[in-house]
Length: 329
Image (cartoon, rainbow, N blue to C red):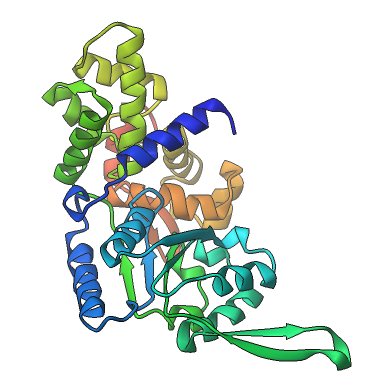
């Protein structure tokens, strides 16, 4: 890992909310989680297993750690791709202590064989293992202590139904409102010691894709720009220059977002166009289009999914400065 990545991870950890009061937005989810936590505490039980769904950067990991802190429990973290063998999952489960929280990110990428180990662990706190092969193979079970599994996924549709059904509650995180993003930005700026004008807060918040992780990333680059140019305050000019060198427009669109819209408009007459055809035209993975680009474009009202394919909406033409024939206005 290079030094830049190390710095970013350190800053991300510093900016992560440590108390419910510091976690802005997702109010309904926070309220419901706190009820589940309080009920579990009153019964002196481990809380139900929780599934968190939503786009990357919306705060699923932060919620998992807040739950752990509220429960007074240690949080052990892993991810779907890291669980390559049955032994990996068995080792993690067998080393859990009573009341601990196991957080699995990218749960939709858990191997189906490993899921089979999770089912009895979640339902009856049993770890079933098979030792040996062929006629000499034998099975045995290990009792597990009470624990809480919190899983996070950006693609809920890829989770198997047997796994999904074993969670006591499923919460879907949505994009943040502008005022919540502003509050997050101001808090992060205060932690980093960055002074910002109200105009800069407005500009950077609107370009954040309504996502905390993105607004924090933009803030770090605005801090860099202001320090390099000897500016004590991030004002509207620095905010605009920051977005310019990041190649982000005032609505938060990046080059690939705009290219996707332009391809639909220019190559396919505004659509509708099928996902496979669009992916081929962009030389892009279908999953990236569905998970990364489309959700935000649909939130802005620039794109619509129909039974016939993807359709560019009038707001997209207006934002790109194109007429209905795809020509510049």
